[in-house]
Image (cartoon, rainbow, N blue to C red):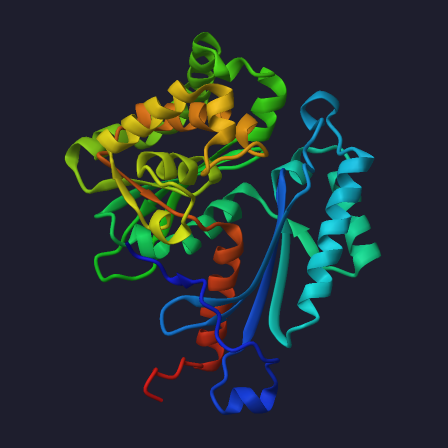
Length: 354
């Protein structure tokens, strides 16, 4: 497995300018307000990638009811504000070189999304912004770059989110440099929107097949332009997935007794392993999924909608391997800020030998 993100934190100390002169690493923070979750990550640069100092996540269900009403509800916005306030308080522990906060599909779709962003800025004095789908795909590439580089000549990166799914067609340079996003697609279908719209139908054979067909129809124009199936037949193309759907699938496919990030992040699943994991999930039913240690009752309703989206992707683009990434937009933001800081200042991490 390959991972440029370490969850083993260095000694927790505030980072001051004098400390930086002695080689102490600068700290950065990233906040991602998604359709279902609010997540925060604080990290410092390491020799390769980053080391995590602090993390926080909370289910806020910001997109709850959005499919029916077209707006963010007062209760959902209040939950998000409360979670963001927790993030802001936790960031006070650190002397930060850079902070970035973003919102994604729920705020892009909602009629009152811009007003809600303005409320966050006013109430919390937090410079949050709603990013476009292309940047969301670019941040996913940034966070998964260490996995993508091992994929051959091309990678098809996908991120199944709460309110949308991002697809990135990625070119991998021969010199080991940063992978580049050649093309991207964002479809307004995610696990939260499907869960609300389908009302459990994804747990039936017919309902699941209907969703797979619907998602496939949204992906077909992208395939018609880029002919990814032909590229897969020529070899050197791997699927790279970053989402709760693929990490859940990996946990089941690897037959883990409990979820272990170190075994999932960077795992390479053959197509046979993927198909066996999908069959096992289908066979469990709602109650079996709710009791599975890699899933749980709080996420069970999202599993089959997410798996339907993944099925459409993997059937349309049948790559022989799937690389699994337990990382996302927060890591992408941190790695980008770190890369830009290094380019601007020439800062380098000291070796372990000093």
